[in-house]
Image (cartoon, helix red, strand yellow):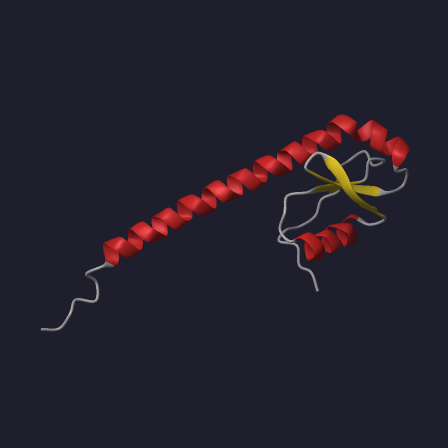
Length: 107
C-alpha cells in the first residue's frame, strides 16, 4: 500500500500557524520597544538638541547608544554591530523626523 503524502498535512499546518503566531508576537514586541525608544527621544529631544548639536542620536532601551552625522550611516553601523534590535535614530535639530526606508540594506 502506498503511503498518503498528505496524511500529516494537518500537523504541518498547525506548526505553520504556531510559527506565524510566534512571529507575530515577536514583531509586536519589537514594535512596542521601538515605540518606547521613540517616546523617550521625543520626551528628551530638547536636552538632546543641547547635548548633541548638529548630530543625530540613536536611542535603545531609553538611552543614547550612539551619535553620528548621518542617520542612514548611523543606522547601518548599528545594524551591522548590534543586529536587528529596535532602536530609534533621528536629528534632534530637525523639525520633521528623518524617514528611512526598510528593510535597511547594509553592505
